[in-house]
Length: 309
Image (cartoon, rainbow, N blue to C red; front, side, top):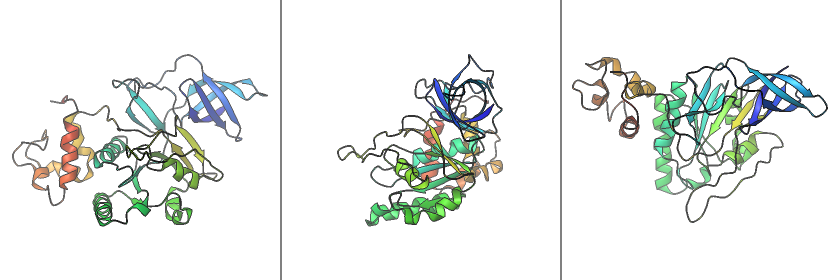
């Protein structure tokens, strides 16, 4: 029987078959999967799997096979920094929820998320939440700058107040008929947003800590929800850092769209866009490439291996 994974706890899985029945399943042994993935979780939310029924009455089954993935998105495994963790599989787009304050989402976090989406050929979108907190000029100015910056690169952006369902219609239309991965720091309002998007959903939410200004985890495991018959969203645990894996220094620039458009004009084909002469990327800093995005590039490249040359 064919089913799709809706929730994974690492050892147990909740899967939904073509008739809409929800089964509790366990994996049978080890699976033959793409060896290049080397993930800490061989079965991910969004995977299509084959089941062997154990109990029709109890709705329990064994997963006997994983179908080939259309795509997947990974980050550094929380348990082992030398391994990948598959965040989700078979998705249409990836959405990062960001906030300007309470808590503040760094541009570095957003950029790492966007780079990973680019690397796995997954369209990305940015949602700025907590619009009601942008009343003070300094916060409003930072939001306007970030919105204009990312839209100029080509990323769709939305500004919402997740606890006000009336202003979510445009975002709902954008998500319709797609499977969307949702990611963000703890406390940015992912759970509140999902409660507003999914009919009848009541995921527990928590306030941001007054003394730390940081959010608290309310989602423990990744889980997929149905908004309607053809629209699904995948909630993920809040993360402090979106760790990039499987890239080296010479690859990084091609996952910055604004750099990718210029790098072929550099004098050297192995240009790192740091100290090399006649670098088209460096020449464009402050015009076609923002100082903040270039700073993100420099910060990230220092953490990556130098493998290609």
